[in-house]
Image (tube, rainbow, N blue to C red):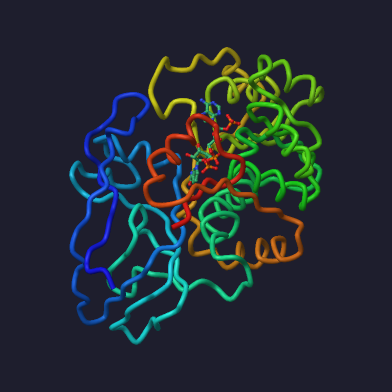
Length: 331
Ligand SMILES: NC(=O)c1ccc[n+]([C@@H]2O[C@H](COP(=O)([O-])OP(=O)(O)OC[C@H]3O[C@@H](n4cnc5c(N)ncnc54)[C@H](OP(=O)(O)O)[C@@H]3O)[C@@H](O)[C@H]2O)c1
């Protein structure tokens, strides 16, 4: 057994789009296992857009990465050594010590996977953070219901593809926007009634064509021109769940909102959210999503990169739109 392990560290803070030189892969001795602690060998690592804001030195809902320190994030692995009665060797866990080969810590930092028969990587996708974000954002924040017309941006991504499928499972009409023909074709395959290629022309025009009578719900992953198009298309009492604004994560020109005044006349309800708010209700999500995934009603797709070395590029590729479905790194 090797007595060293590797982890990605934040080397410097980026301005604008990050680059390879902002990250550094370092090897360090494996820490000793104290009483009550476990050691986990990671098999799947998650890269997520929210990690971009953690590279900045700003106060937010998750702490910033520190320069010179290891980075972290979602991961799935197996317990390889345990000094805790709560976790046995060989058990599969998901946890937040990603960006590294091995995770060491008190057993309470690691969650046993619930008894749902899915492949391990799904605990980072449709049965993990991105699936739960889609579920609670659509059903609890936007209060979307059968018969609603739902517009979702970044619809071929991890959260967006789950939103499309949950909305269809609940009897809604769905319009998804994504970049490029391949993604648009997949969004249709997921059951969306209309799919917009936002790279082929202005979103606002495409949305007006797809929803001539307007939309009841907008699930925002992008911000910018997609959010503005949703303002333009909103019906009376439309509900907007603001999940993410990836359009602005790397800075650039602030977005201009031509149609924002429709918030007043259409009485739009706009609510931002962080999925962790719903952790006390996670059982509802496992019950419904577990069934949908098991029955094949919700499909999962991943873009997988191989090896720890691939982490920074996999992460940067989220901002280049290189992923279809959930972007993951397999160790
Ligand atoms: N509030 C929460 O609790 C929470 C939790 C998880 C995620 N989120 C947010 O949800 C959103 C989606 O996250 P995800 O993990 O599912 O990522 P993802 O959608 O799987 O990957 C990001 C996708 O965003 C699109 N994109 C990138 N830059 C863009 C731009 N400038 N304009 C338009 N589209 C762009 C790309 O797709 P195209 O090729 O289609 O452009 C890319 O594939 C993000 O905004 C994220 O921050 C929020």
